[in-house]
Amino acid sequence: MTHGVRLGTGPVTVGRRAPEHDPGIVLEPDPQRWVGRSHCTLDLADGIWSVTDNASVNGTLLRHGTCTERLQGRKRLQHGDVFLILGDMTSDGEPQYWELTFLDPHTTQPAPFESPVDVLPAGPCLRYDWVAARAYRCDADGDVLITGLRPQGHQLLRYMAGRSQSGAAVACDHAELITALWGAPEEWPAHRSYTRADLAGVVRAVRLRVEADPSSPRVLETVTGIGYRLNVHLAGGRS
Image 1 (cartoon, rainbow, N blue to C red):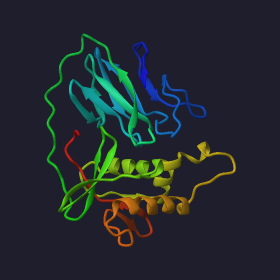
Image 2: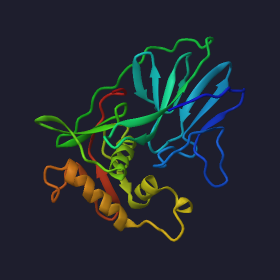
Image 3: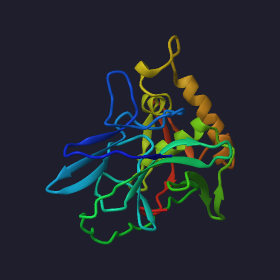
Image 4: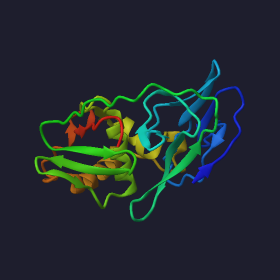
């Protein structure tokens, strides 16, 4: 999926339409609502264009040459850079991205990218490949691809992996995860609400796929009175 637009001089928001919100670049159709309302922003300062991921649920990927990395915060854009936003997934689990190419022959070169050190928890954990949109269970025997995830289960893992920027497990509360899966309450279908019971159903389905023993979860753990915690392996800044 591709998109083209001519940029002016002011900030340009990329996202999806929502009540009382119309971004400068609209990515649709968005059947899973995986594109954020204000997913990322392009802005011009001192003659330099940059892109910023606005803490989006599903993240933004930035491709420069042969290197694709997850966008963290604000990044200077160079001619030919492509940023990718997850829009859908095929029945076979293949990600389908919106691809937006930045064309500006006057952009200067950035400093070389330095990848942080891999952080691996002591017990079993999850590694998320942001480029291929695939999850792997990691333990002493190596990495095993997690298959059979439904879209909401995949979304849950993607969101929780994105919350763990330092490799440390982050506890996500129930309300946060409900919003990540089904959007804000004002976007829910009429006469429909989502509760902790709905969230627990998604968690149970995910545990059947990621846990060696779903009755004693060690990858996707329950944090009593708060929500859930995903033990992740943060493998550098790129996949």
